[in-house]
Image 1: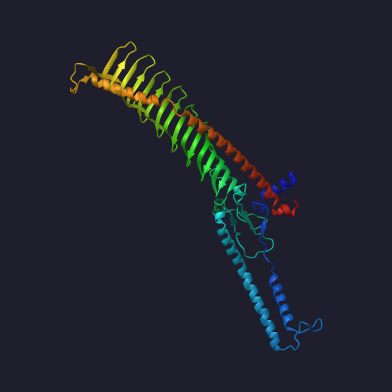
Image 2: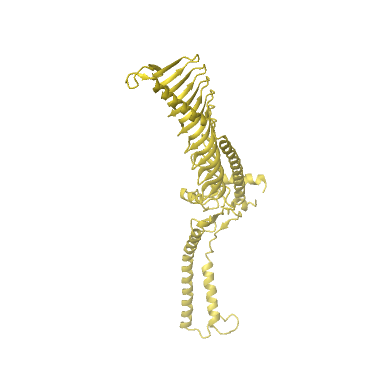
Length: 450
């Protein structure tokens, strides 16, 4: 069919002309044409002739239909037989549509497990010859509808298509399997593979306002490897589980910050490295999105801290090395020096004792009584220094994340995103071909000879 013809048919379709539903497997329409109104009379006549032929002897032509000795009884028997046959025909005519409907439902239920579904016609009762009754069969997983939006209810009239109801479209979507395109009411759009009406396999999900996801799906959720991109420029590449970031991956924020490492239930959790746009960097433990545990922080001015973190702040024991050569070893509380500690200047001078809110409050001394409540013995300070250095060693042990696992997750995510884009292209192409093919099967196009 030429492009000009397709344009004509498409314009007529937009004006409200119904497009015939087509079989997704071989693009053939399945029509239910009601029997002719004269069919019962024809059947009664045929049965009457057969009855007369079997109950009359051989007579000259044109007299075979008359009894040899006509009487009231013979004519009464003939009338009774005719009425009986007419009654049987009327009963069958009333019962056949209901029987066909029940058989179709039974077949639909039996094929439920095989991935096929027969959309029953809205009515199997007889209508006028101008009305077209069609059914649409969703193909199995090997050959399915390329566009989920094509799973619409049957057309009741060739001149006007009925709009799909929510329940009918939901039942059609519930059995869709293969490649397809589906648009959601909130403006989102999915292009890729389906299994029983859910996103499964590889596909691309476009968010109406915030970006897209390219990667693997299981049961309608992100699961496997994928790439998620937001409209402001943030991007994540790595593993997913049940719709959340889980495993290993790299998140690049639109501000320039980057996190690479472990994830759990959508948050950074485990060992990771956070690099900020200002040049600062943290390598160590994370717990539910914040620095928590042991880690090393490199500040942009050259200072470093290695030790314990609690709720995203330096808390516990740790060693802080200043860029100018000074050094503090001891206890911390919510980001400030708090407790026993030792401060060493670059010239070798030291200050030891009890620190409060970042300032030295009580100096330690060798002569003080270790049991005195208001005096600080130097041995206690040395114990705090040992704890700080022990925490530093644990933080240094985490100074390098498992780069191989992170790099492997990123590579797998890139491959999954590529496969998802390929599946999306196939789904879009099938949807385009399906929309063009549906025009060629419309009743108006066939009547016009296209």
